[in-house]
Image 1 (cartoon, rainbow, N blue to C red):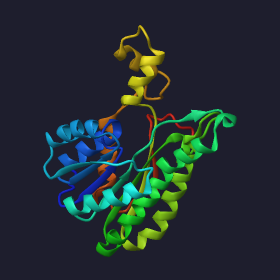
Image 2 (image 1 turned 180 degrees about the horizontal axis):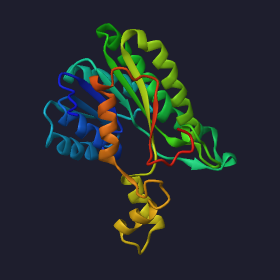
Image 3 (image 1 turned 45 degrees about the vertical axis):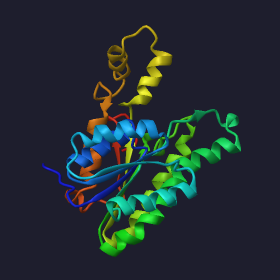
Image 4 (image 1 turned 90 degrees about the horizontal axis):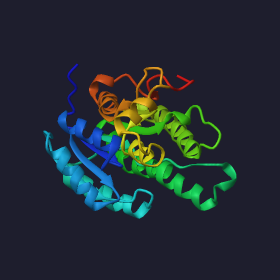
Length: 260
C-alpha cells in the first residue's frame, strides 16, 4: 500500500531523535509538510538536515520545551505561520523515568506529567479548533505498553502514559463527529537512542549489535523493533487509509504486552 500525506501539515514533538525523527522522515517522504519540535537547537539542526534529505514538502524545526505552556503556545504559532494549520499532531515527547514509588517526589511527578500529559493536552487544545473547522484531523499519542500493563517500579512514566491512554479515548469520542481521529501507539522495545544509552551502562564489553540481539530474545518475535517499523504504523494512522480507526491503542511491541 502506498501511503500519501500530500497536502497535510504535521507537527511532531520530540522530533529530533529516535521515534520522533523516524516519524518525521516517514511523513516527509509521504509528502507532508513537517514541523519538528525538541529542546536542543543543535540536535534539531541535524534532525532537520536528515529529514530534508528525502522530504517532498517543507520541513521546519523549532526549539521548544513542551513542558512549558508559554513555549508551546508561542512555538505553535510559529509552526502555523510556516507550514499552515496543523492537520496531524503527534504527541511524542517524553523520556523514561522509572522509580520506586517512595522515591518519587512531587517535583518528579509534576515534571513527568507536564512533559507527557499536559504537553499533549495543551497542543491538542491549540490544534483541535482548526481540525474541527476543516473536518479533518489526526492526533497520535505516543505512549508505551506500560499504559495498559504497568509493573512495579514503573512510575511515574506508567502513570503518565496511562493518563495519556485515557485522554486518547476521551478525545476520540468527542472528536469523531468532526472527522478528527485520535489514536495511540504503545511502544515496546525498539532500537532507539534509549537502547544506545542502556547499552553504555549495561552492556559494557558487548558489541552493540550483539547487545541488541540478546535484548530481543525475550520478545515473542525474537528481536527488537526498529524506529522505521514504528514510523510506518504511525504514517498509516495519519493517512486517509486509516479513515475508520479512532480510539485505538496499538501495541508496537513484537507481541510483548500481556494486554492486546
